[in-house]
Length: 224
Image (cartoon, rainbow, N blue to C red; front, side):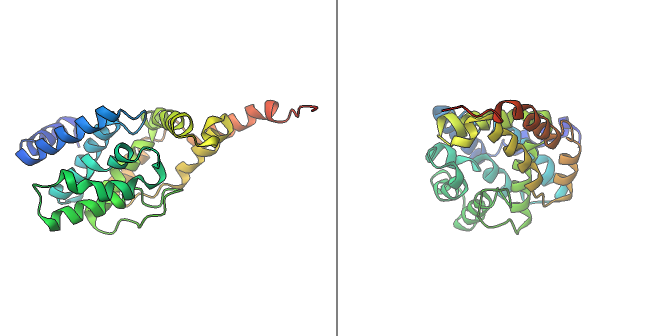
């Protein structure tokens, strides 16, 4: 799909008053908290992914788009508990969704809860509906390619130095984290294709070279 078509379709959707209101409210909430990696810049990229994947797959964008706008809300409301951000976001989203029916709210909440899929370290249910799969894939696609590589560097800082996860404070921990790309599960044909198109750089190759380079330093043991 051509980028201009994605922009046109997304802008058309955001003409809906309740979606525009939600977009602005979420933007304000993220910018006020200003996370390092899971910030509004990341959300905007994922929104574009969601439109691309959702339109090609024939998903209900009335569910996908608000879910994508709010999918990382848990980082804003519970920044101290990043591993559970899908759970926190799925609970906190209701206060942003007063203009949606209860049935719609529940579908949006389920999309948020399941947006990590099988990704290592997250134990929530896998996506089942098409809309849940689109939201999941839209988020996972941001892990691939050079944009994904740089996003990983930002996650390394966010998790290690702001959230105190010790292994993210070392280069060895980062080398290990890069191998998690093997654990990414994509659920739509469009998501699989977009990820495959972002094959450069090779995270596993970088991880291996980094680990080999670190061996010089890791093999030294202090004599006391």
